Length: 237
Image 1 (cartoon, rainbow, N blue to C red):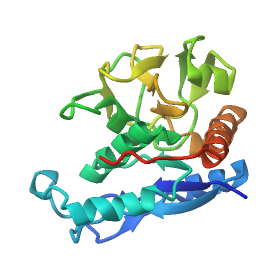
Image 2 (cartoon, one colour):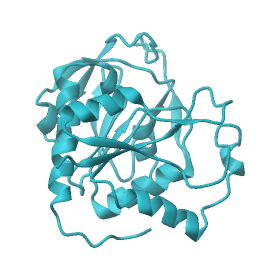
Image 3 (cartoon, one colour):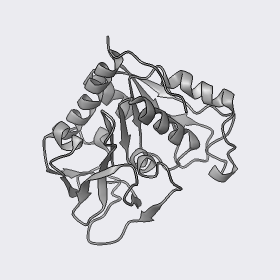
Image 4 (spheres, rainbow, N blue to C red):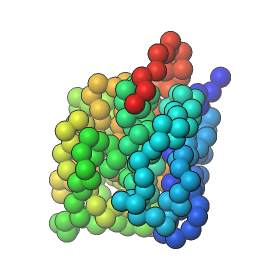
């Protein structure tokens, strides 16, 4: 049986609608990699696209349980790109870390990971000859991966080209190890050392259609298959 992979729903860009959407490129990649995708939705009766994050209330116990009901189903999770972090992102990440659920963060998803355990602390991209926001989806710059990383063991490559759609970049994390950098020194990949598969990448593998990206999604699904076979005692937040 295929493992269930939860895709975190995102506020539709530019955020002036009342829609939470699913990244369909990711949905297709999960299916091709051998998983069954479904959407993880935030639990509050809030128009997330129109309300400022500072105005969103903390979760009630009932709302936490609504999220946990969804997360218990997950054999793996993808936190996609987007433009707005929600409190549900950090709840989902914390739950995945504590229960060792395989999770892949993409672009904004990686930035959520890098900001785990602290207030949002990103910086605007410097202009050092590399453009880090190129909407066409073309491959625009090289990244270098550390040999002793989980990311390297999955993609089996230490240097390759990626696309790039981010205005902000992350700083070094207290909890995640930085394992991949662009040539101008921006962090492009991170991983949580104590989990089986907990990796964030700054680029968008779902839009690259190459062997590196296929290995990344395949690695997530294979970890999810192994996770699905384990006896579990869930640790709640």
